[in-house]
Amino acid sequence: MTIILTTAAFAAALALVLGIALGFFRDVFFVPVDPLVENIREALPGANCGACGFPGCDNYAEAVAAGNAGISSCTVGGPSVAAKLGELTGQSGEGMVQIVAVLACRGSKAHAPARGVYTGLETCRGAKLSSGSTKLCSWGCLGFGDCLAVCQFDALSMDKETGLPVVDKTKCTGCRMCITECPQGLLTGVAQNQKGAMTLCGNRNPIKQGLIKTCKAACLKCGVCVKNCPKSCIKLDGNISVVDRTICDSCGTCVEKCPTKALRIIEKDVLSA
Image 1 (cartoon, rainbow, N blue to C red):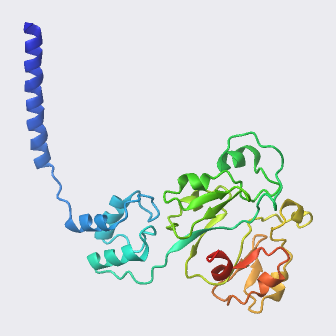
Image 2: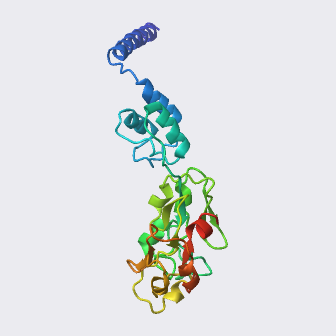
Image 3: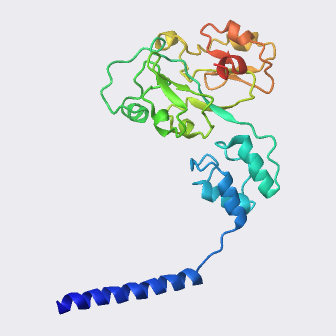
């Protein structure tokens, strides 16, 4: 009994000493928080997605307050958050445009045949590492939904009929998590006010013969768009049609001439879809 009481008394005394010590060190090493940092942090959405280039919202708030980061880097918050940060810091939040993720691939189940029965790890990254691709088109969307798994805003869903992810543009914040995650590099960020044509295909196979058999919706590298563009703003770069959207006026000639309709007008066919 004596041992129990002694132990209890010793534990209580030790707890008291530690409590006093912790209180002392808290006061000695206390670092005052900048009110500006707190106000900026409260204005941020708290997604901690890293799209701003910082590990989390706390780090971004500190950087903004110190003048080491701009106020327009929070894609989740968009222009409204940039405006709030502008009021707090005196910086201008004008000119920020929200972006959304776009899938640059139309290799659906109907367009891009499977190579065979895949029995490996059912993730896009696993399939790419183990077999290169589950489809005849080695550049196409693998359809296992790695992008869905990392989306924190429920902006992505899988279309069972096509086997391709669908972006809900009303929910997409442009955080770029899905863009970073896609092992095929098929998701890209497009500004909501962007205009012009873009190629919805990632097939960069330099061999044209038999290309249509791997994907009926692929860019055939035929050069028809290049030859017929009135503005001469399209070129074959890396075996894919690339549009200079600083020149493109969305005339639609390339879309009309493209045999597989791999080219699309962004404001008409992509962002409004």
